[in-house]
Length: 175
Image (cartoon, one colour):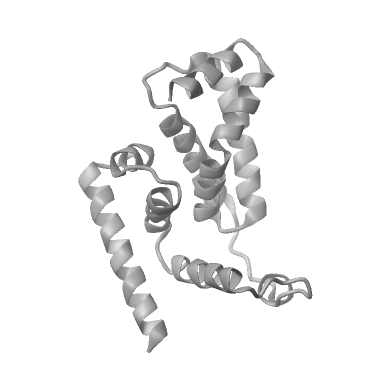
């Protein structure tokens, strides 16, 4: 975390190398969180871009408290939720969203990923975020509670409730 704070310090002085290093260390978590909220690759990429722009512009106002990832992910989460609220409801285009193209990957890993995405899509946005932050990105529940701005007990119970839902969904699929 000290390294991330050093990169923020570089950005505060206007050094773009700080942004590049910060981006390289944090991009998977930022993209994963944005994608878990927005569920569209293009929207997640837009939010990711806006998040790093906000970080770069706000680096001089950052106060080191040993939690640069929480700061970054809170920015990302807020931008993603703002984008989600501002989007009109849209109908899925059958051709673009559901029919695979000729270059589609039907390997076992790809099919597992499709099943995982389908099951995760049945969780609420908040549950999906918590599961992805913990299980995929490796954040501790205490960190997730800070990022999500909720008590630790709430984050834990939502995580366990989401896992229970996922377990039930997968059991139903096997029947």
